[in-house]
Image 1: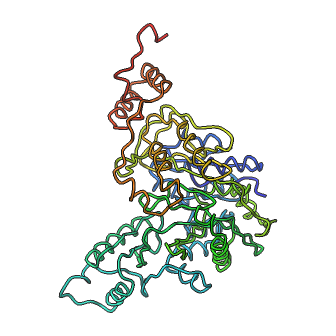
Image 2: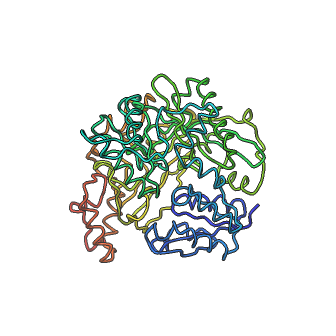
Image 3: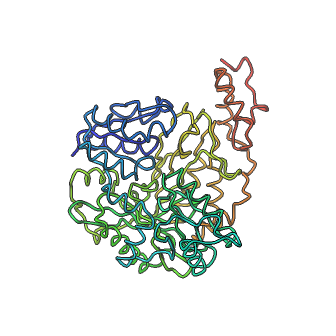
Length: 523
């Protein structure tokens, strides 16, 4: 086992990995930008190394500085977490060339599965169903001019248009190297295709350094179900069952659960999807933790969507129902250990839910929010877990993803667990930054979610014009806000004034005009 590793990430996932290492007796090195100098992950790690200024592009993406930090501090391996460099094949190669262990799959697998078109071809070769689509020989996309009347089309353009006619509308234009909804455009008519193609190419080039795109048949209101896989270097591969991730906004997940309410009533479908996930992993000799994602249509047909060659944000719900610590198993597999269990010995117990706590304004198209965390109360209790890198006083900046924390709960069955999650969300207090907590409560309470009638369009169908309910904040929160006002420094007062200008009815700062503490009470 490793003596010391470097975590090439920040926030809640860096904290999560550090704590797993602490339990295993492994030393840890954190890296940080100037903006994260006082962040929780830098304080929990045994050592911390400054790698750059505040912006992500100049710090957490600097592979050279990260590898040099690992070598200078005597690390034997690097854990990429998720995001940033986690699925960067060049980084994985550079780590190996530096004679360090990359805690994840090989660079070759990352590169192969990072190409959505190449991944589709591999899956088709081993009999895993894929969504109908077309990418052409070069996957360069449909030029804007090709749909303009009276202009000549090249052979490639003609092939694209023929593929479009064969698939019909609606369809998706997707980035070959894409993920997280970037480089993706929904196209409902032929007239929309040229602009959508060009827009997707620009976004893909900016986000991934690769402008290639492809076409994929759009499945109306599908369910998004993924299988956690785990493979070792000795040829063993298992799946750790499914996670349903159908509840999304802007093509990004916000609530995940396991078991899936769809597969809970169809064990045959679960087995077939699990077998397909394992076949996908075996096809590329997958080693370490990963995820095979599927879409399921209204007729219960499932299709391969993509393989995520990393740990997923939603991995905690799998841990709760299986009793396996995925981060620890990542470390063990990377150190050369063999998996000691087979598929038949694995099982799930109970039901787990995860809500992603974002700094965002759900009432205004989920616009990311910034500010300083002035007060924080995280829910506690049996079966309640919070994965977070947040502490009071932290500045939430525009430099990084707005994910603040993950709230995970475990219950005996789904309905009990939904009630448990709603109670936990009521306990969650974050002051100073607008969050999506009240939106999550309303989403969980909706009849469609309660019934388990989920799909990727659920938020658009029912919450397009969502507004928070007008409600009074708890007295305790008002008291804390008032006392904090009396003690705050001028800079903090300016930040708080900006927060008061917002329209979040759950924010007690907005109510301070009717709540004051007199001079005699200040003592």
